[in-house]
View 1 (cartoon, rainbow, N blue to C red):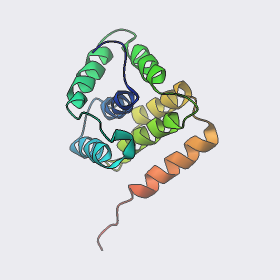
View 2: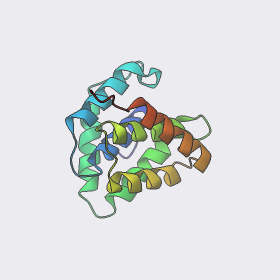
View 3: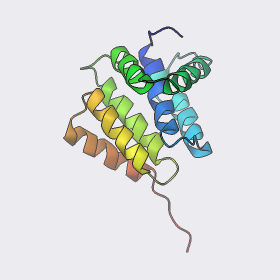
Length: 142
């Protein structure tokens, strides 16, 4: 993949990056990504075969020195600011982080980095984070 991503590729890359944050891409996180791509209007007419290409790009970059910074630059460059897609990307990252029921310290730190890089304000981020927690609560059987 070249250094140019479509906005949809950038959203996918953000989710894959979040899933890889703790070096363990869980089944629940991967299922969440698949469900998001199937359901959200942002992925309408998206070529799902690109998910593999984007995933490989993310993994390859994360194995390089300064790869995280490069990847975040590519993501930020592909997401048109001011159209709300930066908040969409952050919301998707939050959903992936919350998908397995526990947000780890590495994921919290990465969410903070993504929030800053995508210029998502604190109040918007707090609302997005709370909504992700609400969507992923589990009801315990008693």
